[in-house]
Length: 366
Image 1 (cartoon, rainbow, N blue to C red):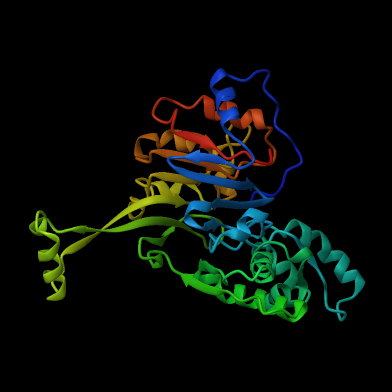
Image 2 (cartoon, rainbow, N blue to C red):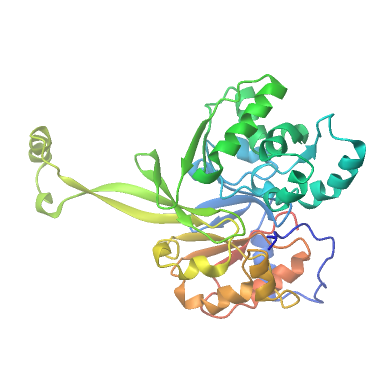
């Protein structure tokens, strides 16, 4: 069966007649610089089928890259959730080999645009015309203005910034390397970066007091989310009350005087069905201080089954699982482009008591 992703939809939802007072208050709090959520400034854009890039400047990182908003360039670390084009390289065109006839190009062109956001699921259409995976990813894809991931790396290089560290699912690491090779050939630039492939459950240390772990998500292609943990050392109870001199002597003797405390600070889902919520391995996701999660559909013109067919989450599912979320704040992202801003705001304002007050929406671009 052909897999699907939520593409850009020109149809817009029916705009509601009025906004609640609560919605108006939340609207005033938002700005082009994003939101303040539990002490973290969070900004960016996330529109289903268009682009997703969520930035946390205080942690020097961004989740997914979309069209590479300028603010993302300043972040040293980039975490990619999956290979759909609106999350990793949004602006694409296709340049077919000259050996492919114009009639063949005419046949493939509609699939190029239809599949631009979900190219893996359209692969058979291309393979039927003698184009392999390498042909499509390396020979045929030519980003306009170096969109997304290559633009992020290239711009940091232009500004002589430290080469970034990019974390991707291990399953797509090889294809990402091919993407960079293609750009090096076209652009004649080094595109220096540190590319890390992580599997679910694996960790990477950003610095001594900060690390990230990949967790399982459930989309129509291989995907994963990320939990960012704070890491600190605390003095063991048996040494509490000792003088500084005594502590120093113990350290000189090689005595381990501290133990490590980790706390989940921010979790990011990327695109996923609600199944991640009931995955017993994802308990820290639901305990993170801030959970950034997708809610592609927010009203009843699209059903839960529709959401699942596209590999996404419906707001009604979040409501159903409300008692599972221990997060202090939940930031909803990745709303369908079919919605007007008021539809999103009113859906959030109408949430039940278990969620009301701690759920916000990233609506930049709507």
